Amino acid sequence: MKNIVFLILDEFADWETAFLASALNEENITQNYSVSYASTDKDIKISMGNLKMLPDMTLEEITEDNTDGLILIGGKTWRNQSFETNYTLIELVKKFKNNPNKVVGAICDAAYFLATNGLLNDCKHTVNNLAEIKDNENYTNSENFVKAESVIDGKMVTARGDSPVHFAKDVMKALGNIPEKNINFFFDMYTIGFEKAFEKYSDE
Picture 1: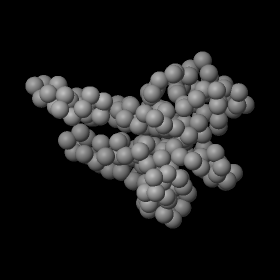
Picture 2: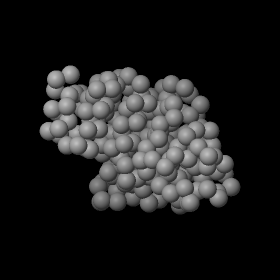
Picture 3: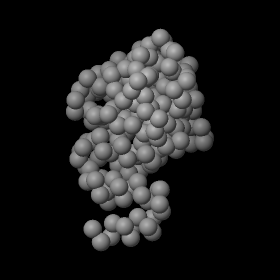
């Protein structure tokens, strides 16, 4: 069983979690995956839509042994965390990025956080708005910015906050063992509609 950990902060963007988490928990799309949630502590975190989430673990409890993919979910508070929390987040992402068997995904302001802390300087990527990051002193990779809903580069996936379905598709691709037909069916369900998607794949 592979465990995918979603990292959420206060005022997280709940819609950015929903598509990927539900796909990973749906046995008709994926198998042998579990989903966990982590945050700065185990207190209830309230989303932008007033969804109340109780984290399973703290940042310090995330290890390479218990986590196969680290998914950073955007929200309103990525830009005003404490120095200590920022340091912990940066070191955690570095550890997973340096492991070729681990997937790292970041969407919306979580991708902004990675860019402005020098963590997207070695890969193709996207963010909500290049203008927000291009002059940041820690960001030196504008030539590899891609204006797209979601970008996959090896085991790194970044996406805009308005593209959670594209993000989910690319994360599942990056995980490497989910059938392509299942991934495409999932994506088509939310882009062309369930009936058309079902017709498209029912004869395959």
